[in-house]
Amino acid sequence: MFLSNRDILELQAFRHDLHRHPEVSGEERETARRIVEAIRPLATASILTGLGGHGVAAVFDAGVPGPTLLIRAELDALPIEEVSAADHRSTVRGKGHLCGHDGHSTILLALATGLSRAPVARGRVVLLWQPAEEDGTGAAAVLADPRFAEIRPDVAYALHNMPGLAFGTVALKSGPVNCASRGMKIRLSGKTAHASQPETGLSPMAAVSQLMPALTALSRGAPPAIDFTLATVTHASLGEQAFGIAPGDAEIWVTLRTLVDDGMADLCATAEDLAAAAARDAGLQLAISYHDIFLHCENAPDAVAHLEAALAAENVPFDEGDLPMRASEDFGRLRSVCPSAMFFLGAGEKHPALHNPDYDYPDELTGIGARVFMSVIRQTLG
Ligand SMILES: [Zn+2]
Ligand SMILES: [Zn+2]
Image (tube, rainbow, N blue to C red; front, top):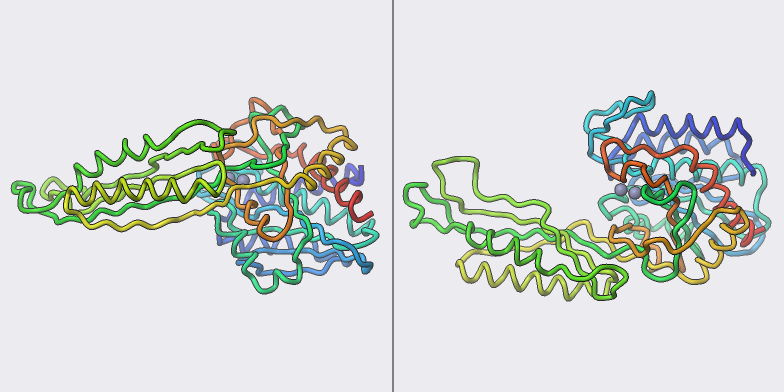
């Protein structure tokens, strides 16, 4: 193990510090500052800040030609009130690190500590703390940043902790591991009226009540079926909160999921046809927009083989688990640049689920995640 007991305690204190000060997607200024403050004393790294927003990269360059290996963690917390009695609970009302990104960020700090003491023999390691994972914009913004050219990897890795999976065990496989998803906002506009004379207006009420079950009915199958689709209505609104006004406007938000990107265009087209037909039948105006767009996450076989070798070397049990999973992950964007792979590290079968108000990252995972990544780094770069 390349970390001492003292390192582990310092890393835990660092994680608790991040946990106390959660920042949501796109607002991770303080979190990025804390990370830079922690890695700056590690003189062997050069540091890039402000990548795609508040992203931070630490580059460990051997000075000898070789591949560039990137490991990604996320900076952002969630707009959810944490329910916790822990000393390190969130100090920010309505915000919490309830996905464990504070822990993933700490694993990268552990790697930075190890790499500064024992540099790689060739090539480069890029540790990337990526902003705005939760809304699906961060990875794309980092890739679009002109300075991404300075850290362009030949292979990229990431992990996510996974409640429901036995503690300290890993789920990993080649191919799709996370679904593609996107939020579809359907806006229907008619005309308000006095509630005593609704016939003089144009209410979207019937269209909304027809569309919500029709959209939901687009769901079929389950992963790993290649034609898996899931449509989840997440929000709907109709008119004003008033008894005197017949509604003139409505909005339906629906999250669309497919196993792979290829299926998404078809699902969107079908959902748009349903909305267009409902609007046309009722004489309503229709506007559709898309948000929180996640590509599916596809593990490259070569990168998976490296992870499997590392897991075996570190005696971490692994199998394919329940992959691919329905949830999305914007690490999927990295595959447009290089082969990539992500593994899922068990947080315990009974552990509160991600995004639950009582979720907290288990600190004991930091050493395990760091050992696996360091083993991959040494295999590839010495
Ligand atoms: Zn999350
Ligand atoms: Zn997450």
